[in-house]
Length: 149
Image (cartoon, rainbow, N blue to C red; front, side):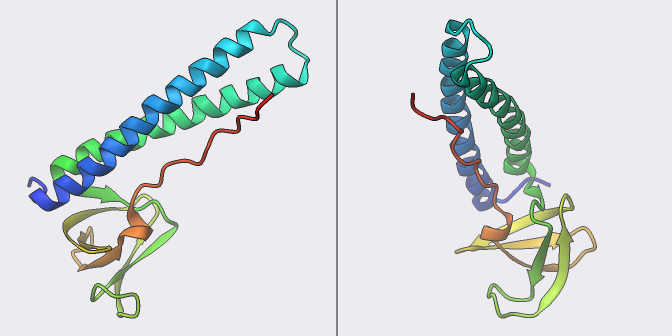
């Protein structure tokens, strides 16, 4: 079953942001790699710092590519998976509403619609409810550990 136009648009917006950030990160990491290649002594503080940044680049780019793949699928199907340890599925689109289900990290659910900061979802166990987007949306990684010389 394809995602609703509203859900598809939401996931495409996330996808666009993540793809732009991945391009930006790749450029930053390429510049760090170029700078590292210019340092011949591997034991200097600058070389060690750049080695650490390049390891961080590899980890984050891999993770970002994984999330981008999930976003592409979500834009087509509306299926998403929880990234928080536990996400509450509420009866109504309000924080103080009763809980109808819980979604554990990695559990998949179907996003049916969007209302403000809330996603209308159906869990794998068949429960319908609302998840706050702040508890469910993909969050871009923080800045790279680049320190000016």
